[in-house]
Image (cartoon, rainbow, N blue to C red; front, side, top):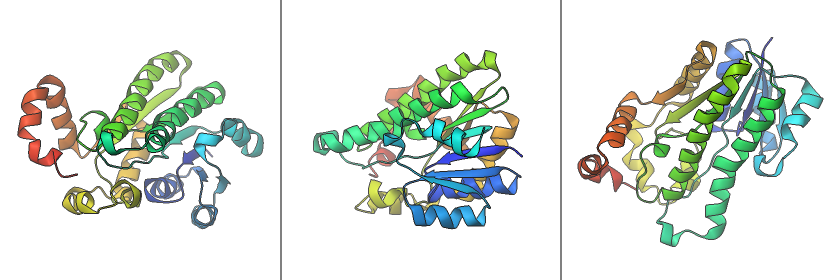
Length: 247
C-alpha cells in the first residue's frame, strides 16, 4: 500500500486530502500543529499522525522515515496569510509568511527528494496568487510565487531520477484559512460564490498525482486570466481593477 504524507493536515484542504487519498487506497500520515484535530482525522482515515510545526522541524522527513518507513507521496500543504497593505504589515508576519509558505516547503521538498524512491511524487500547494498578485496580498503572493518557481525548477532536476513534482494553484477555497487571512471578513464574503470546495479539489489533486500531471489549476478560468496577465499585464490590471480591490 502506498503512503502519503500531508502537512497542514489538521483542517481545510489538508484534511480533505487525507480523506481523498484514503479513499483511493493510500496509507495516510498527517502532520499538523493541532494534536486533537489530527487524532480525529487520523481515526477516520485509519492513518498515523505527527504533531509538528513545519517551520521548526528540520529533521521532520527523517523522523517520518524512522517512525513509519518510506513514503511514496509528500504533500506540502501547510500555508498561511494575513491580507494587508505592505506598509501596514509587521516584520514578524512577513517573515512568518515566507517561512511557512516558501522556506519550509522548500526544505521539506529537498529532504523528501533525498529519500523518496523512483516513482515518487512531491506535491506543493501554491496559489493563483503566485501567478496574479493583488493588493493586500503582496507578501502572500510573493511567497507562493517563490514556491511555484522553485517547484518548476525542482521538477526538472528530479525528472532524471524518476521523481515527479506537481504544483497546485487554487483560487479561494472554503476553509478556515480566511479566519486569519481576512480578519475583516469582507474579502471572504465577496468571493463566497466562487470559493472552491476543498473535497472536490482534493479529489482532483489525488487524480493528478496518479496521472503525474504537471500542475492543477482551479478554477480553470482563473488560470486563463493568469495566462492573459502574463502576456498583457497592464491591460489585465485595468480590466480586473474591481476584482483586485475586493480585499
